[in-house]
Amino acid sequence: MVDLATIERRASHIKLLLLDCDGVLTDGRLWLLQDGDEHKAFNTKDGLGLELLRRAGLRAGVITGRTSTALARRAQELGIEFLRQGNEQKIAAFEEVLRSAGVEEDEVAFVGDDLSDIPLMRRSEFAVAVADAVAETRAAAHYVTQAKGGRGAVREVIEIILKSQGRWNDLVEDYLK
Image 1 (cartoon, rainbow, N blue to C red):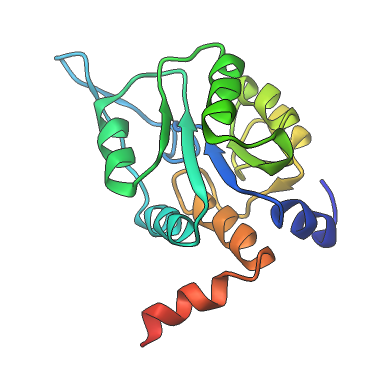
Image 2: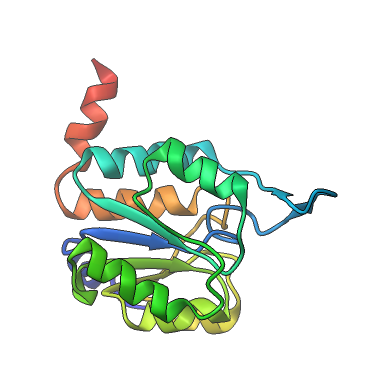
């Protein structure tokens, strides 16, 4: 892990925030239903953070190995522009999202929790692991959140990005009027 000044420098360049889903946007637990779908629980603080990110003019996406209608619905509600589900090999989806978004790797933050996220973290300017990520993923991160996955970790990362870009105070001020 690196010092605060380096974290802020890395975060100040970010235009696109990419996330894993299970273990990052959720706490990693799945409720499998008889119809083949699944339930997931999402954190409302993460949701508001993603809305603030979008209001600041930054973009967000999710790259995940599983496929879930719950995630598709949540992504639509939050205006998550890039949603790539069912990608066991995440690198191809990562490269495709970057092309679609018109950004370079040095403009991307990626938040992960498990081994399959490490290759994307290594290619991102700002690599983040949630507090309860596996040891190897935490070791690959520039920053490890205080919050666990599904418990405000995404919001924590968004605040770091927006504060490092000088956008946080104006966005908060809109809520205090």
